[in-house]
Image (cartoon, rainbow, N blue to C red; front, side):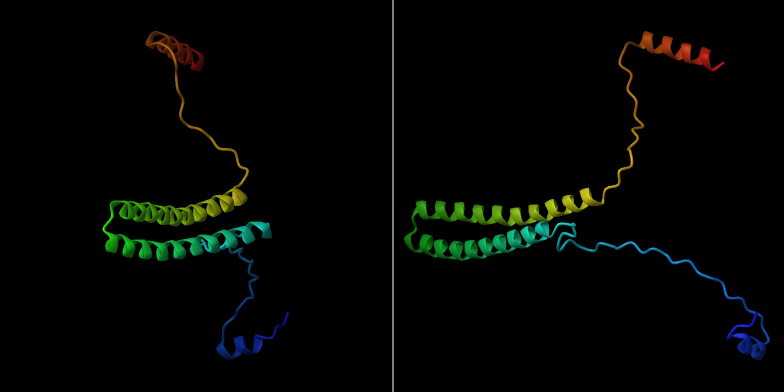
Length: 145
């Protein structure tokens, strides 16, 4: 059977065969979490909205912290420093919520990608006395013979 490469094979004085190749299925790699890749567009929409709101709250909180620190320094009042400390804590908690949002999205993706394969537990536990354990082992040895 002639093919289009026979003239090249003749010129190079070689014999070559065309070997069919199999397509390799490429699995997507995940470098970072930016958006959920769930099937539901609602999940993605909610994620984007929550993320934007948290960013907005953090930015506004930073502005408020700057303002209250100026007031606290001018008045030198213990109460204004207490309020500033509480506000700083709230801004830090909001930043923590932003990180928790990333973790929750990751968990949602893992649940969606999780296979239904059963898990095997290799650890066994014997509850009883040593005498009972010895009897059980002796019986197992007798049954094996």
